[in-house]
Length: 200
Image (cartoon, rainbow, N blue to C red):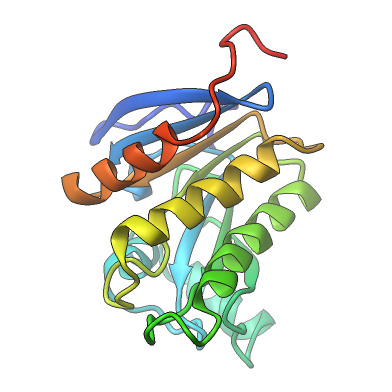
C-alpha cells in the first residue's frame, strides 16, 4: 500500500510541481504502475475489458483481481465520462479508479466535456474514499486520438479546479510515459495562475 506522500517508484523520474489551492499538482515522467499513491487512475474503455497502453499496463501490474472485481461489480461496463473503483491488487496503491475518456471524433461530439467529466468522476471517487495522494494518466491521448495539447489543457484544468475546492487530496500527480506528453502537460500547467508555495 502506498504512503501518504506519493513518492515515485524505481522507474519513475519525478519532475515539476505547482501549488494549486494550497495543494500540490505535480508532473512526473515514468511508469504509473510503479508510482506509489493512495489511488491510481486508469484510462479504461467503456467495456472495462482491459486493453493496450495505460489500461493494459495497469491490469498486468495489478494482477487478475482487478478484472475479476470489474466483471463482478460492473458487468455492464462504464459510460464514457464516468469512472468506477476497484481495489488495486498488486499495484503500490489502495484503489484504482477506472475512468473512461472519449474517442476523438473531431471535437463536435462533446469530447471536451466528456474528457473533463472522466477526470472529475475519478476525483469524486477519491473524495468518497478520503484519498490524499492520487496518480493520473493522460486519458484519451493515446489510441483514442485526442489532440495532445487540447487534452492536456482539459486534464490540467479539471484537476486544478478540483484542488481549489474542498478536497481530501493533498497531492495529485500526472504520471506521463512519453516526453512529448510530459511536455504538453508541462505547458498546460504553466498556464495556471501562480500561487505561493507556502500555501494560501
